[in-house]
Length: 104
Image (cartoon, rainbow, N blue to C red; front, side, top):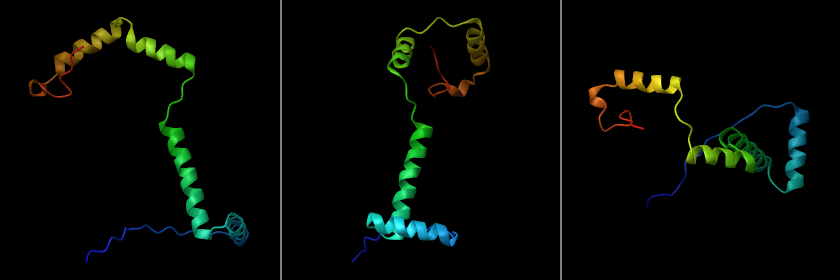
């Protein structure tokens, strides 16, 4: 019979006694073990960091501005036109049918 165990990682930390005592007290007050408290707290902070770094928040005004730009893009300026010409000049023949074979 195959066992359905999940692989787990291990995290260890050495902290000063005062910090350990504080963590123990907080864990006890929340009804969790120190390990559960540390994992829950670290996970909550990790999720907050990831969201802060990966999610872009826009005000309604900025969202409408961005949406308008997507729906009605401005005409290419001189620099963009030159860049597109340079791209087409260096594009390889083997790029046909790939993401590098881009046409506006």
